Amino acid sequence: MFFCRCAAAACALVVCAFGGWTLIHSGGGEQAPDLQAQTTRAWPSPSTRPQRVLSRSGRARCGRTEGRRTHACLLALSPACSVPAPQSLGSLGQLDRAPRVPRFNRAVARHCCWAPPVASAGPSGGATEPSATMSGLSLAVVKRLDAASLGRLYGEAGGGAAAAGNEWTCRAVFGMLPPLEQQIVLRLACCGAEGADVTLARRWVAGADGGGAFANAVKALEDLRVLELDKETRHLRLAAAFATNLRRALAGATAEPWRAGPAMGPDKRRPTEDQVAQWMVWRWNNVLLWLIGDDLDETAVPPECARAFLVGAGLMTEVAKDAFEISGSGVDFLLKPRAEQVWTLVDEYLKSHAPKEDRGDVVALVLTLAFATPCESYAVAELSGPQTRALEVLHALGLAYRRNEKSSRFYPTPLGVAVAFGGRGDEPGAADVSVLVQTNFQVLAYTDASVATSKLVLATLHLFAELQIRLPNLVVGTITRDAVKRCVARGIRVPQLVSFLEAHAHPLARASGRPLPPNVVDQMVLWAGEDKRVSFRPGVLVSFASDRAFDAATAAAHKQRCGLHWKSRARRALF
Image (tube, rainbow, N blue to C red):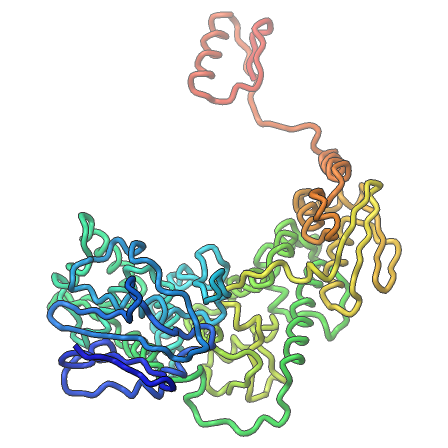
């Protein structure tokens, strides 16, 4: 066993093996890459760099595999970095507990290769993994791609076109896999180009249902074209492009996405972070204002593609030729956090508007953006042809800034960096407008005129309230019967209106436990139900000539539960 030590100023990832470097390369003769100079660049942000991977005993974790002994220690990359210790091994119950299990792989899977640099801090202060309930680019989106698109996503270049995928996309896809699939991928990455025999690989999973779990995991990886099964030799191996880029991701071969080409010249007109952020908010708010139906000048009207996404996602309904208005789904859309709003339109673009042959490149672009640095410049020449076209769509949604269509640089915005894996923030702009609803249906909206999101909230409020007075920091209106019924006619429900008012309720009203007066909520429900006092149900009226026939039909209707709405024995009739 080798003992790994580092000086106080050193920062390195040391992976030593008996008979070869098995994590990065399987085989005996070649030397492993110089990881000491690369590892510090392998982590997109300081909050995601691992300080130390510990076992239950508190020491650096090491492991060994059957037939090839491997020892690994993940040493401190920086004293300022901190992440939570690995989770308990109890969550990986399907994995074999025999000495042959390379336990260091679990640490690598959970801390070295988990993709999103946008993960928020958990209660312990470290980076937390995104939950499955988050909106964003999940494994389900990757499964929708065809074989050619998956190859492009993993970095295959065909037909003379540049590869769209890279180590960042493979790293992101690996992070989406369940723990068992991650284990299989990591072990096959250590087996070289020949892979591992199926019989031997099946022993990696223990338990009574180990064979079934292994077969299901292999089938899932084959569907994703991550893994290949050679039917002649009965060997499992990783797809060539995926294996190459995954090893590059493990080794930290590149510091940042889109830096492989020649260095760009100095950016003489580089925008500041505030300028990019202000443009992003302006661009996205214009999309939402157009959804609500607010009047916008020609420079603020969203591009045609953004309007098509809103209509295609069912957020707007057509009321006349080329005339649309917000629907009930659109109001729900406005109540969502900004990251979920953005992903809804990006997902609509991927499903219905992007050409089928370009979808792998688009998914690769969105995943790679998650590792980019907001407001930094990147060369458009590093993108493939489909990605360059998709960049125009991202620009229309405020996810990437460009000075003009011919600019050779683009700047990812904070929204663009967060779109792949979503966010956990509250509804944006909630603190910019405080709405106080009084028992006489009067609405007082305290606003900050200098904040762009205030206009968006007031435009939404105007859907169901008549705004009467506008002051620099105060808007006065009244919730009226006609306005509420107009919303109901559009398909907007009263619970949606109540949710909006509660989301923007004044802090004092929220602290009282009743952000809205009960009489206002009840009256809105009554107004909405005025047109639904009579309910219609389809049915058939049947009359009988005798009581015996009536009783038999009634008994049969109850027995078969066919929906007996009404009956009258005196009239010998059923409905």
